Length: 346
Image (tube, rainbow, N blue to C red; front, top):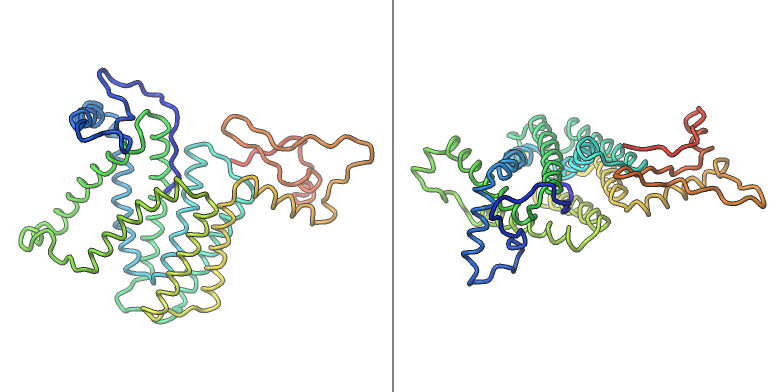
């Protein structure tokens, strides 16, 4: 999901509401359990309208988790890992639509590169690249992973919007998500496997491999929180790229996955797109400026003795206006005169 930040409060606390800081890790001692319980009762039950807002992303996250299992059951692990990076594209689009964020030209280009890489990998998969189990359905796997990416992008941006529009802490919001997710998961379990669970027990079929998957998923969720807190976007981009490489290597060793030039090209484009999209704005602007300077005729020549031109970057509220190329370069690329103003990429 999208990075989560804490925004300003727009909702006033109800009567008798306790401080949201009581839910921060380490603030509730052993003798303060009653205080914590009262706070949870106030925040979760009394202010139930605020809690119900989390039902939407919780339902979507529960659906997304199940779609991932459908996708990985019908696609090779390496193909799934590459295709699942479409969540970066969906998250970016929902951020632009729902949070009015702006993307730089380099980020838009990286998203196009990402889509191209995924399309190449899927074309390789459709052409029958390498042997695959007979019970796999690539079409169903592709539909599941695309639906999972769409749900992941929307739920992540919706959750961030809720966080920035209320006074609740991230800890409290995660607790509310967990409550809804657990309830929805139990309902789905009863609907699909209620008879089997009643007959054989809840933990029937939990082999050591299943427990390993459960613990790995839990550890991965905690690790994401650590990465968000202590790492930057570049490191996250490298981690994503490394996960694609490791998934491919493991698929070759365990499932006999065949890497042909078409898959290597698509995976390479996706890895490059992830890295470019993760670059900070300053680094992205420097890369774009260097590309403009190396283009020859597009370099803006300042007449001798004239003061330097004003900077072409400015901030207007939440929208960031960026012109990575000089004005005459924009005109040359488009074929039309450009207005003497910054361009807003939304």
